[in-house]
Each structure stands twice: as C-alpha cells, then as structure tokens.
Amino acid sequence: RAAAVVLLAAAPLVAPIAATAVPDSPEVVGQACADAEEGVTVVVDASDLGGQVTIGCATGEVGSGTEALRAAGFTDERDEAQMICAIDSVPDPCPTTWEGVWWSYWTAESDGGWEVYEVGSDDSEPRAGTLEGWRYHDGSAGPVLTPAQVLATAGQAQDDGEDPAQDGAGGEEPPADVDDAGWLVPVTIAAVALLLGGLAVLAVRRRRAADARRDTVDPSEP
Image (cartoon, rainbow, N blue to C red):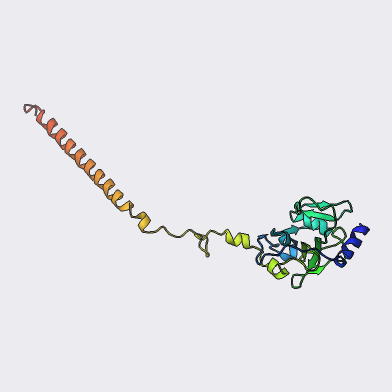
C-alpha cells in the first residue's frame, strides 16, 4: 500500500503522453446523491478515452474511497502493485507498462472544487456530503464536470420520469376530452329507441291477448 501511495505522488512528475481530446460535452450518465448529507457522490470520468462520465451514489457508512467506489456501483481492477488500473473494465485490458496516464483520484466539498487526494483510495475516509472523483488522465486536472455540475444531476431521472398527465395539485388525471366521449350520444339514443320499441311491442301483444280472451268468453254466462 505504501508503494501505491509513492507511485501516486510521483506520477505527476512523469512527462505525460499525448491524451485523447476531451469532447466539448461528454456523455453523462447516472446522478448524484439525492440527499447530499446521506451519501458520497462518486464520479468516474473516462472522457479522455472517448468514454462517458458516470455518476453514482454510495449511501450508508463507507470506510474508504475504495468502498465508496464499489458502493456506488463501480468495479475496480488492480495491477501487480495493487494500484487501481481499470474501473468498469476501462481501459481494457489493464495497462502492463507505464504510459503516463492513470486513474487519478480526487475529492471535493459540495461548494468547492476538485482537489487531488494525498493518499490512495484504500486509506482515504470520505465523509457524507462530499464527492469522490476519478479521471483517467495525466493527473493534472480532476473530472471535467465541476462538483456543482455533478450535484445538479441529483433527481434528474425522477423529474424526467414524471407523468405529464398527472395534475400537480392532487395527482388526479385530467377529465376526458369532450370529443373523446362524443360517441356516447348516438349509442345512448339508439339504446333508448330500442327500449321504447320493445315496450311498444309488448304493449300491443298484451292488448291483443286481452282482446282474444274477451272474445272467447261465453255470452250465456252470468
């Protein structure tokens, strides 16, 4: 572990190789912790490799930056020196030689900027409400999204998923459009007409039956 910390501290002194240009607007997936005080927001930035910026939330107690990374839904791979060489299989495979770029490790307060950690993720102790940042880069800068931009993603998935048909006051569905119910009028009229016609036929049959019974009565009966 001590060797890992030394490598992390010495890495910025090595001349970096040319890095892939970062897109102006890298794809961002995931969201920050909805309740900033109840979790640690973790940012994994692979934009220098042409990938995306992924945001996750580690809720509950986390004992280290590595635990926060895993609790937020990420997986890490280690090299022979036990340095994190890949996150979610990026890069794939893990580099076997030093190329001047690595998963640099950062921290930030909710109202501050990215600051590079002076210890490795196995030894850090992130607090609830703070942000953890990882960027595959030469270590000269933290994730491309500022902490404020990261925190602004909290709750976006829920907002986008709201049903626009729900009324904001009581959640009731709006009344049906009058045009949609227009077919009820002719159907109702037809049903009433059939009912009245049936009653008329029944009345005629009863009257005829009564007349027939009257005609069959014997006139000699008192």
